Structure formats: structure tokens, C-alpha cells
Image 1: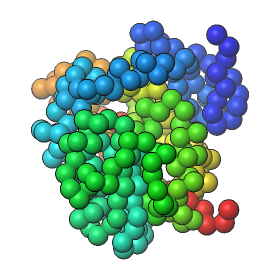
Image 2: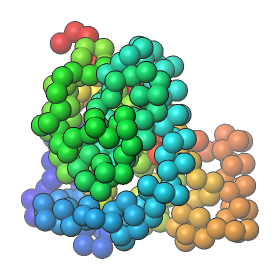
Image 3: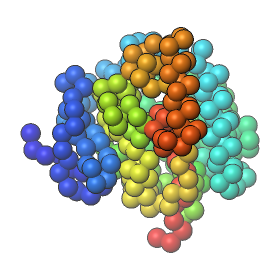
Image 4: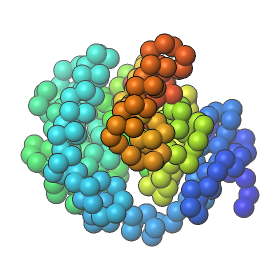
Length: 286
Ligand SMILES: [Zn+2]
């Protein structure tokens, strides 16, 4: 296999470790990691076929049921963050990989005009109005230009993020806001014991960003300036909870230790983060 070139700097990426049949490679300079050999169209179609959102083995257990309250709470937090960043009233909001559109529903409730792209027919059909009629299956079917681009837990699934984001860029107005959530490898598990981090899960996740490399990817592909990167998801413990998938007393005790380390500033708080919310603004001068 020829060396994979880093999407950010073009240098050869080096091997880091393997997850089953997938070699994970990284660029130390850019802090960017990816699967070396991307899965085929057929493999991905099979992965996201019926059941992805409903306990079909990959993905989510009950996304349209029990997990919906979690999605709604995340939607409120993310809309609040966009409003703090200066979202204008009546904005046109584009979300790519919107699942059943709970974020778009929250945006519509707050008076924004929404459009969603979702590959899964199962997910589109689970959406409710006024969102359901605003969903399309692919980027090529999107019309018009937008004031907001949102993608939550989505970009890391894309085989070719650069070209996909370039297509998104064509739809964004100057000054548009960008809100992206990705798992980040800044945490202790990913850094120190990568096999112990459950977000290294190819072929679902194909790219592994840090706070630094997701910022660079968004700046480069969307011609945007990063405004902020904040914690989107922090789990209370690392080794026992995340690596051994054990909860209960031992995990709580471990959580207390990590929390104390963070509070005492003996450790970078990012070492406890599983996922980050990045906000950016598309540059006005092109
Ligand atoms: Zn690089």
C-alpha cells in the first residue's frame, strides 16, 4: 500500500494502530488521523442500510424513540451556541446528516427556515413536520444558499470530507455560521491507549480529528474562521467506563479521580473530552 497523503499538509501519514482489519494512520504535524484504506460503496451502503438508527448492530439503539429526548436536548444546546455566535433572525439553516431532523425542528421552532440532507430513508420518514417536507436525500438536491451549515456527528463518517465540504461551501453565503460536532482524539483514552477509545470505530468513523485538525479542516474547506471550540460531550471516567464499558461503583470512583485531576489543573481538561462543538464563520472576502 502506498503512503496516504495527509488531507491538510500533503505529507505521508504514518501507521498508528489497527482496529480489526482497518489500519489507522496519522499526521503528527496536523494531528489528523484516518482509516488508511477506505471501505467500498457496497460496504458503506450495507452499514447504513435499514436498522442503523434502530439497533441494527451498528449506530444507534433506538434513535427515534428513547434517544430522541437526548437529541432534543442537544438541539437546544447547539441552537443556543449559534445564537450566542450572532445567528440572525429568520436564517436559512442547512444541516447535512440530519437524521430525523430534531435539530432542524428546534431551529424551525425558533423561526428559522430549514433544509436537511439525510441519506437514510428510514431517518427521513421518522421526521415530523414542518421538517419532514424539507428533507432531501443528497447534497445535489439542495437549492439556494444558507446562513448556517450544521453537521453533528457526521463529518467523521465521510470518506472524502474535503470534496463533500467543498460542495457545502458552494451553498454558503459570505458570513455564514458553521456548527460542527465531531469526536475528538484529544482525550486520554485516544492519546494514551487508543484501543481503549470506543470512538475508533471504523467503518462507521473513518476520520479522527482533534480540536486542532477539525479546525484546520473547516478553515481550509469552507474558507472559514474558527470562532470557538467547546466541549460537546465529556464522559465521567476514562479507563473503566470507556475501555472496559463498565459502570457502577468502580467507574464512579474513577470518575472522581479524573475530575479531581482536572479540577487541580494537573491535566488539560481536553483530556476528558470525547467530542467537541466547533463554531466558525465563513469569510466575507472571497
Ligand atoms: Zn498533515
